[in-house]
Image (cartoon, rainbow, N blue to C red; front, side, top):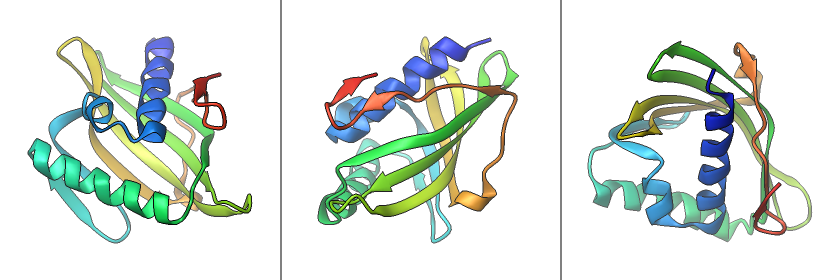
Length: 148
């Protein structure tokens, strides 16, 4: 099983996301990739499109003054030696400790160039969450900007 590798991957992913580190975020994705939300689907086929999409996400979070986000639960299923499906339930917390948003994200990961990389993300309402074969921990302390 790849539980430790997946936990380390999401720790790195969450650190990059929290720090809004575009270069580190880009290392977590295989291009081309797709991002799906209930509102739209985006094909990201270049670094330029990747940067624009994540700049848009980071702008929304900055305007909403999101300071903390964390995984409510996380699980994965290994589909083959180099493919993994992951479900993470996220909660984003606003400046008054209110829930800004919560949702389930389904990540499709492929092992490429010696590391796991995301090639598809589907975000849905939290009610669409599923428990996959193996639970794992997404641990990153956004309050202190450090791994747990």
